[in-house]
Length: 152
Image 1 (cartoon, rainbow, N blue to C red):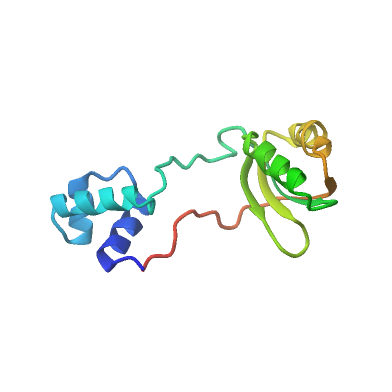
Image 2 (image 1 turned 135 degrees about the vertical axis):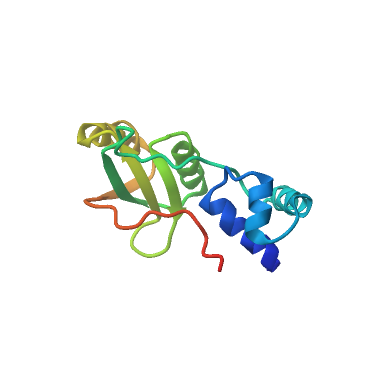
């Protein structure tokens, strides 16, 4: 479990990772040097994985988002490894989860439009060995999209 000050630092960094160390320290109520040491420790321990910019997909030209559920015919190790490797190479796949239940993998896919999504399926997903079923749930409206963990 993380110390309270580390949780507060993470909460503030999730809100705005462009804060200066002085601003961050003021918001958490510690010195700049203490904030710097704690943030560096969080980075070194892998708690802070990376820093990123959140881009509005529609304003950037990515008008179609899909939750794509993929089932494999057999769970042969080589098919699973190949699927995972190939999914990692496709930038259209923003997230991929191995899941229990309805499908083996849930992918969040973002592309320009329906033609691009059809090409993604035809040229990539349908050609992967071992894929037995693909179900697409097209996102009609984004209700909530957040990346911040719920630190209090």
